[in-house]
Amino acid sequence: MKSKTRKSIIISVCAAAVVVLVVLLSGKGGKKQEIRYETAVAGKSDIAVYVTATGTIEPVTEVEVGTQVSGIIDKLYADYNSIVKEGQLIAEMDKVTLESDLASARATFQGSEAEYIYQKKNYERNVKLHEKGLVSDTDFELAEYNYRMSESAYNSSKAALDKAERNLGYATITSPIDGVVIDKAVEEGQTVAAGFETPRLFTIAADLTKMQVVADVDEADIGGVAVGQRVSFTVDAFPDDVFEGKVMQIRLGSSSSSSSSVTSSSTSESVVTYEVVISADNPDLKLKPRLTANINIYTEERSGVLGVPAKALRFTPVGPLMEKGSIINDCDAASKVWTREGNVFTAHAVEIGLSDGIYTEITGGLAEGTEVVTEARIVDSKKENAKAGMSFMPGPPR
Image 1: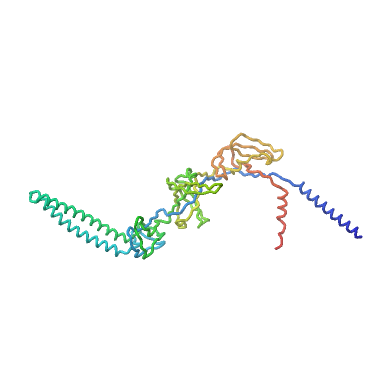
Image 2: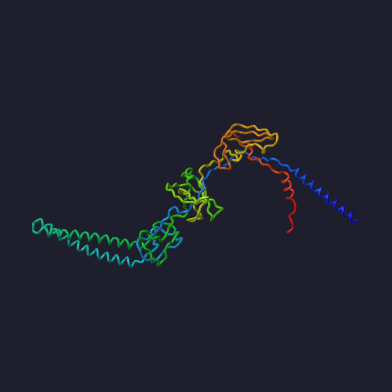
């Protein structure tokens, strides 16, 4: 009994192995592939070519307010975001030292003025006496010398007095324009020194509803940029908003920066860029100074032109992408698209215009509404059917 049972088990295992082998062999033999063709209809579209760049949002008019004299900041009458008018008092410096300098300069001037008046009268008297021969040449020359020296001292003291008066006036700082304070660089009690560079106290922007974007455009793209071109840009602060602008100026001065790339040997390349100024309306004051903008400068645009996907011009019905028995009606043309009716492929010579890499303008050789082949690909129909069937199966329990 045991030997019969063992024998029946072996037979069952062998039968199961045969069934599995048959299933595997039938699966390999049943693999089926087919060619799928993608098409598109030639129709009206908008095609644009643009240059990308990055830039910085800046006010159109921005003035740095400083001081021409050294001293201590006594009072500040403006702060960040303060709205100021032209001539409005915004800061005062300590005037004690400046007033003392003015008093000293005035005293020196008064002394020089008195000496100058005396020496001038004395010289005029000596001129008349010398003409009559009543004064020696030596005395006359001495009188003239004293007069000229007193005149020089008088002019010098007058200039020093004017300078002291101006310096005292510089201690009262007013706004040069109507605008908004966007930066403040000092605090009350701080000492500023006016040396080779004027100390900056405030930065005032004239009108934040009118902004500009200063973009750095690569030297390879600057040739297509022109004044008046349309611009769109975004900022990270408002990623869903697209702002519009226009090219206002292309600055001739270039700047270069070095970019290093590491290969078998370390090399450094210089990247040359040009500044392009773009106007931008800012009625909602969303655009803040110094924001970074991602910019598209539209160098060429076509609206409502006949176009097809650019990949339709790259499609060619050859090799394994053709079904058996297909008929090809080709033509000798530099640019062409293909139409398909059943297993017949026909080439159409076309004239092309502007292309943005995705769509290409067709200027001749193709009628609107024509269906053209854009791509052919080989697919495993059995796998797709299996995936379609599995998509209706319930998922595993959690």
